[in-house]
Length: 207
Image 1: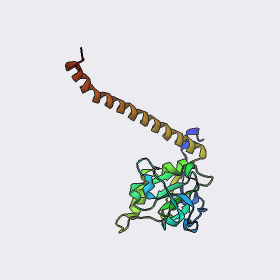
Image 2: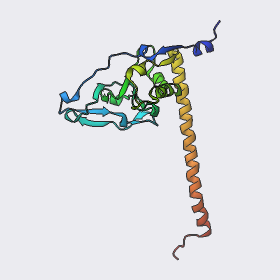
Image 3: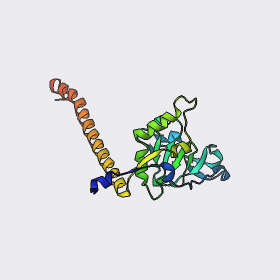
Image 4: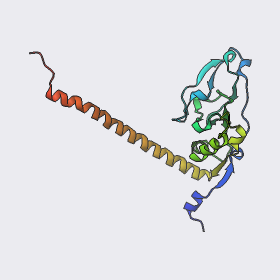
């Protein structure tokens, strides 16, 4: 008989292509030359923070030739060039309807998987290693959408996915709190020499 813990941990390996939908719309913004739009290219992604930090605002007539894919909130973007750098991001609601470069594989989840869970997976060492191995020795370090979607993800129940998401979020919050405390201590330590000097060399005051 399986315990609740066993049910939580049980999973099956499923290729990403079975967990995403193929309804990404391709649109050439140059068809509307005077309309402005938000454009996300690889330089828009902070590959340390794993988020879109610098989307560009441009107009159709100035659109790059690679500006083609219409993205939606909660899409997972995976840069297909230099996959070892792991330039990935979860599209925020503010960029719903924006256009991204064809240099991204756009992963839009079906009902079997939560976007946040997929987003955690594409940041994992397992995924990055598999992507990096695919371009090892290649003259141009890039993978295809087909290769991204061929990767296997350990799929658990939606309930378990939620638990994992909450656990990672909690640990991340704890790390941020710890970093803030350390930075506060470092700032106090930097001020200490000045305080000691003021004690021995007090500022002269006018009589």
